[in-house]
Structure formats: structure tokens, C-alpha cells
Amino acid sequence: MGSVLEDTVTGRPLWGADLRMLTSSPMGEDLFGALRADAREQAADAGTARRAPLTRVRATGLLARPWWLPVLEGLDPYSEAVTALRKVTLAPEAVAPFPYDWRIAVSYNAALLARTARAHLERWRERLAARPEWAAAGARQPRLLFVAHSMGGLVVRAALEQDPELAADTRAVVTVGTPFLGSVKSVLALNLLNTGAKQTWLLRRVQAMAATLPGVHDLLPGYRCLDLGLDVERLTPGDVARFGGDRDLAARSLGEHARHRVSGFALPGHRAVVGEAQPTMQTLDEQQGHAGLAIAVGRRYAFDVGEDGELVRDPATGIPARRDASGDGTVHLPSACFGTEAVTYVFGQHGTLMRHDEVLRQIRRIAVERPQGANLGPGGVDAGPGLEVPRLGGTLGEPLILTVTGLESPAGVTLSVRSATTGRHPGRPLTLRRDPDRTDGALSARFTADAPDLYRVTLETGRHAPVTQLVLVTTPDA
Image (cartoon, rainbow, N blue to C red; front, side, top):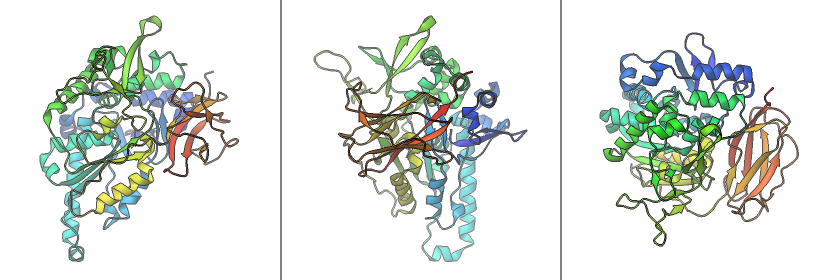
């Protein structure tokens, strides 16, 4: 959801421009309805992009302000990453942002990216040939470096699969929090109306939109994630349909996962930067709700698979062994690390990774490195600061429970909340206390907003880079 979208005919902003879309029922219901994918958009693939690209909705730029959605939660803009790269290149125009209509299938956007990247590379080669002083100063023959956050990494992988010549012209691919194996949160987003949570206009509209979008279905987990007690299975299109998704869109997405398991395709020069130590949903189990609705319940544990492809089981009971694989709050580590051993770990939340100081340092370093192939090396696996905020957001007048994990004591720890739109710091400093309802020793604090807004929660320990997350507070239903 990191690209600004607008109506091609009217020029009306549809996404990423006006926060009232998320806080005001009349405006939001209209715009979320406009973002639902129609039949042509649902059927679009790489062939469509090459023959007759879709024209109803246009991506006009990368997200330039903080944004948010229930379950998928906060997303920071990409301006700091673009600026960081432009500071280390020969000229600012060497860095080309690629916004895309994230509602549509990954394969469709990949074909557009392949064409755009090829044109960008050829333009830059022509420019370098016209500047002999750059070559004399040691400028290399241009090749491509892709820096991709979240779903963007899937788009890059598909683009390079579709165009082997483009892959040969690629020096490296840096993925930040990319769900190569999918994310359980996509199922939870499709399941919003089944959960039994308090139904608001925002949840209703988001679920109705998500159920039509190929892009959301392309984020479905392709690994064994459905906990059946004595066994763990991969999702089927029927499972996704019971949870609120579209059977046909799910079949296409899960079919792509099956293809990737045997394709052996590797991203050239792939480096993965991943967030860890954040409370992350990793698997699901199914429960029956009111009127027979299937409820998907996210669980913070994963299952190991041996080299033989079989589940690792407890030798005494035969039950599949569970463990917390950790993650960035949205993507668990095995999914974000898939396909490479060149991994850098940071303490950070998924949606705010692209403004994380360590992530910015890594992408700058990779952009200028010589020679190619330096392994960033794995980081530590020690416990670190984690932040958990209500994934469905909050309602004005009701306290939000903010939780800090991975710390022994609140001493020296600061948890603050301020408006992400105005910078205003509402209320008193928050007091962290041991949460008696948690068995993991977590700390918690309460925050009650005085106005509907998008708020940034910041956790600072003095020993680690700050961890931030966004949470939306809306007005209650009339």
C-alpha cells in the first residue's frame, strides 16, 4: 500500500493523500468502494501489462506521508530512503522511484517494472557515455540495483523472472521485509468481518475491498501455516474462501507459491534486511464463530520443516514442534529471509523499516560497495525491544493498550505518542508497568486519544535504535 493512487479520468486521489479517508466515514466509504478491483483488474497479468495496461487507476508516486490500515497497520513514507540513495549516486536522477497499483497482481506490476527498469538503465548508459569525466573518475558500467520494501520485493522477483536479460543487467537486489513465503496477516485482513471484533465502517470497507484485490491475495502464506493440532497444512483456495477471500484469486496466488518451491530462481546479488524481535503472527488455526463463520486466529509460533520436507515433531508426543520464529510484526523471519544467506537483522516494525537508521545505512552501503558479493552477515539473535499496538486501531474515548516486549525492566525506557500528521504530543508521558495478564513479562501502558488522528508510538531504550509504529483512532459509529 506504499504508492499513491488516483482516478485516471477525474484525477481524484484514491489512496495515500487525504487521511480523512481513514477517519471520516462518508469519505472513506466512497474511496474504499472506488479501490475495489473490477473483473478486468482481477484478471490482469503480465500479458495484460504488455498488450493493454489498465487505465482506471494510476499510481502517481511513492507514499509521501504516514499511512495505516487495520491488521496491516502503519506504513511510513519512502522519502528518506530515496534521499539517502540520491546522496551517494553520481546524480539524483540515477535513482528512479517506481510506484505501482498495489491492488493488482504482482505479475502485472512486474511486467511494468521490467519495462521501466530497462528504459531507466538505457537512459543512464547514454548519459554516462556523454560524460567521459565520470568514466575517468572511476564510474562503473551501469547496472541495476533494486531496493524493494515488502510486496515490492515480490514485484522485483517476478520482473527478473519474466526478463532474464534484465536479471543479467542487475548487480544486486535489496529486499526489506519482503514476504517471499507470504504473510499470515493477509488472511487476517480478509477475515476482518468474521473475527467477532467490534464492527466499524472502516473494518467493513477494508474487508470488502481486500476480498476483491489480487495484490492482497498475492501475499497469502504459501508455507505450512494452518495448525490442525496433530498436523500442519498449507492453505487451500477453499480455506481462503471460508476466511473471507476470493477462491479464484487464492488459487492463482497459491499456484505461484507452488511454482516457486520448485523453480530454483534466485535473485541476483540478493541481500535481505529483516526486522526481528517484534510480536509476529506466523501461523493460523480455525475456529467457528457466530452463524458458522470461519474465524482465522493468528498464532505467534511457527513450525520447522526438516531437510526431508517433513515437519519436525516432538519425539515423545509426535506433535509438531512449535517455536517463535520472530519477525517484524507482519512478516516472520523464514519468509523475509527466503532465498538468500546474506541477511541483516534489525530491531524494527515492518511498516517503518524504510526509515530505520540501520536500514538506510545498509542500502547506502550496498549502493556504493565494491566489489560485488560482500556478505552482510547475520546479526545477533538476542532478545530486543518489541512494540505491539492494537492492530485494528482504536476508537475515540477508549484507551489503547500499548505493549513493550523483550525488556527486563521499564528503567530507562520511554514510550511516547504523538500525532503523525501534526507532531502534537497529546497528554501526559506514558507509564510502563508489568502486564499481569501476560506470561512473557511484557510491559504495557494505556493511551487515550483526545482527537481522531493517526498517531506514532515510539519506543526508546537508549541502547537500541528506536522502534516506532502507527495506530489510527477513529470516531465511533453514529
